[in-house]
Length: 133
Length: 342
Ligand code: HEM
Image (cartoon, rainbow over all chains, first blue to last red; front, side, top):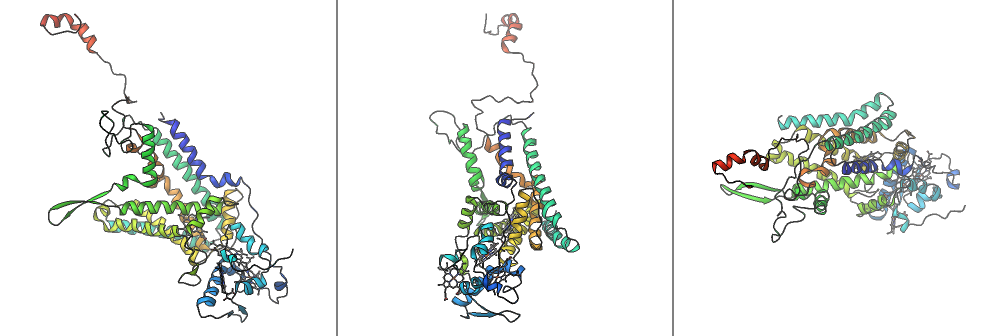
């Protein structure tokens, strides 16, 4: 025989509802995965369409590169240029580095960031490139 | 079991578990197994197991209210009762349960007894267990809620609010360049530190060491492994977080996908989490549900004014005094024994 079922059963229902929150919150609809576009004029003009590091590494560690650059420029060795292993030279800069090539912030950076709901506060101060649609 | 072998045994078990995906992925492409099948199996086991436990418990009778001596119980009108520590009403019980579940009231009462300065007993207010337990549980809860950002799209506002609160230190200007973006979440670090302390106290307090078993060390090590792989993943050995979200959303919407190239560290993290969830209902960790049914906390102390009938009492054949007197009245009167009805 069950005792206090008028309390236990609601408790079980609340528990199951909490644990399955992602299931009923999304209602089976898979959101489209982000599709960052690299079709900017600067990248189109590139000989070999490559980022600073290989794509897979950029995907996971681009924020660390930015952090290192910022540190170098602002309070490190004050060097404003870097050379990659394969001899390409880049400006250690958010606005004059990354955003020169990736001038389509809304179709590139924001694609992933909105999907992941990360809001880098960099743009409080740094100026995003002007985009023309 | 000797405590050292207990620690070693559970440590090795966790180590083996954490590295199963690492070697599994090298032998074969088992993304689908580790990314979809095992997580679904673990969550089903978790839900069915915990609900089963609750149902099982609900079949136990609670015939008697267990009074505890934490506060003055309700008695004579001129004695002030403690309505929360020794409640006589449902509202009081609710208050006591809130204190217990949200603030760990019973642990807060903890004290130690020691011999100090010769044969002299001292009782000391001992708060480290309470402090580490509350830090551990709250940071675990915060980490868990923050993880909803992988499982929801759009991410609900309470999750993003919690994220920005948790990362309020904005250690973007940390001492280690390249290590401090993305911002540091305090809860993850506190979780690791508190679980670490909870393990250390089992080792250095002799009385606690004496009662510690592998089943105490194992969940701690498992949680330490989960927190360690998670922190490594976020701050050092980065993984493809967008791929993780695709996988997690796929699980939540029943359209499972396994994006390529997430990184094996993620599967080690996920597999340890699955082990924790699958192990949960069969271990001491079910106190998650059990705390809501703690016998000494959940019942009002009303034995003095409500009759509680033991449900497994069989009907006892009684012979009341009235019936007794009815039967023996004449003999009693003869013997000079006073009777109630003449
Ligand atoms: C018991 C459940 C879990 C615990 C205690 C846990 C713990 C942690 C901790 C402490 C971190 C470090 C960063 C932070 O503080 O948020 C972390 C990161 C992470 N966890 Fe978990 N985790 C759990 C479940 C999961 C699950 C089910 C997934 C699968 C989607 C997951 C995926 C990740 C990922 C991808 C990261 C890296 C986050 C980033 O780079 O921002 N975790 N986890």
